[in-house]
Figure: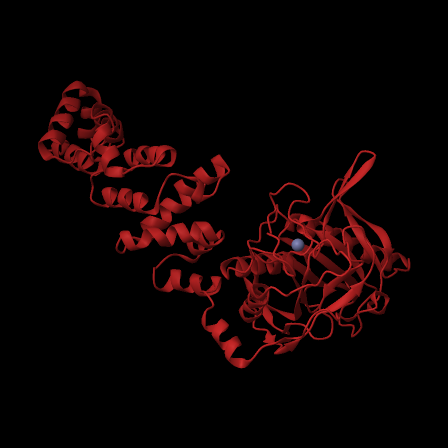
Length: 477
Ligand SMILES: [Zn+2]
């Protein structure tokens, strides 16, 4: 089985984050009650006429430019004929031979190595409704029908489940930062079909293809590819013929199963939608959109490393979630030159709280300005590290101004020479044993004495000063 290689292509469906649907003015709202965001157009009533949402075109062009696609200046929509209850018109409006974005590529990191994944196209289509199967009955919610949806199709450039994951993660990050989609997997903003075939290594032709449909978690995509590659390799090794088919993923069993033999394009009877005009763009419009593109995650990463001086690992942790990166960047203008200290707070304390509370930065009363204020109190030696964490804990619970919290709770660090000396003196007098140890060269006893001073000062003494003064006062004459 080692002389066989898997080839994988992904078709990723990404919902655009427009306010309204693609052909009508109904709101796109994943939280609305079922069938409350519908009208004759998205319910496919006879005689209703679709009107294209310009914002959906703009966002798809943005995505295309972020992915280095060529933008089709003349594209059109086509009808894909099929009947399924979640598709009330008995055809889906999609694009066929003239998509909005052509070609393109995405550079991804796989196990520390960079790889370019070529794209075939991006087309703009409509999402379908959502079926729910209950015991003894089924329900359909048409709120989702008509949500603008991009289908992003790769060339068969991927060869393992890890490469597929790297591609999906990079795609999600790019589209999220690009402001094109919220890319919320729980809400089904990204769903993925996977094409897999296995052939002898170095072969010019691909093997028999299976398509696994509609997975909405990256973890399941990873598991399904691993299973399907194993299944196909085993069948080839045993001489069992494979058939071109559509397969489903059984999460509980961890296996794929046959659903139906795979349709070819001619089965769908594609034809141009007579109700819609072609989309005609000019170079200036494309250039204007290009000029408005936000910083890509890769560019941000380079800037964090080169301009802010962060280690690459820190940049990756912070950039993994867009709202965390936004919070980080919002702190920076208030803490001149303290990017690393800010990164440390964000990566340790902030991200710990987000995990514990299962929330996002915007859900916390902590503001970027307050974190900046806290960092400055530490840098200015008003607060020591343990007390700063206490203030942080209050900021994430109740918000407020760190300076006011320090004053109210009397947390300010004691850095006053005479006060420190008084604490140290008192501890030396009360602990003759450890003092004698230190004086006879057993320096580990100094940790014990330090602990006593911190306890006496109720945690507020400046630890660095305490250590220095202890060493000085106990130094051999
Ligand atoms: Zn509608």
